[in-house]
Image 1: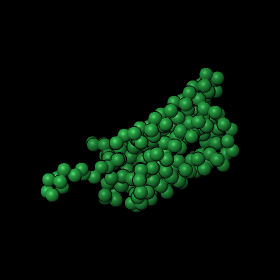
Image 2: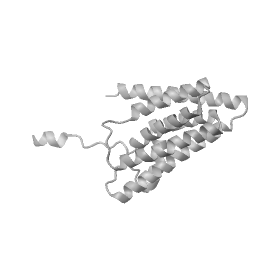
Image 3: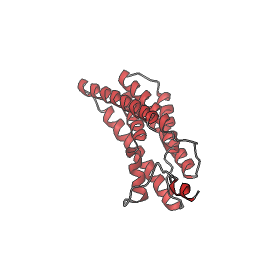
Image 4: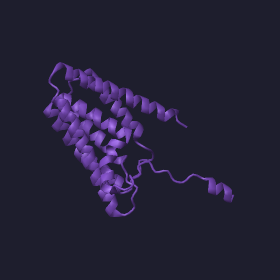
Length: 191
């Protein structure tokens, strides 16, 4: 019995802080270092950027409050039961398809897409810290990192005026869709 207890694996943590950079900066880097989060943010940014400035504003108005709610719930210890990574990958793949097809979407849909992505991303970003100070620092860093990534990608995409730039955005959307699909399928194939 003692040998069996010694051989049991320890608790696995999916979102461990990076050693040596602190909780805040670990939170800032978290959205771009977790593949599902990065893919969802980049594809949402490309989709909103294609829609223009008004679509970007609508997306931000949905994204920011939902991200804040999700991060507060995650920081309070709300456990969604399992990782939301598959849902985020699905969001990334579907949003990437919209980028490839250059769909002209109504502006309220951008707010809804932003809110859904923000809430999922926030709920899936629970920090490992146990003290209130490090938790707050990590959550604040995550909110800044996620919004900065979304803002930067959407702005770069919105500035794409030439034909070759618009084609490059669509190619990036197809790569994002393919990447999200591959990561999703590898998640199911891995033991």
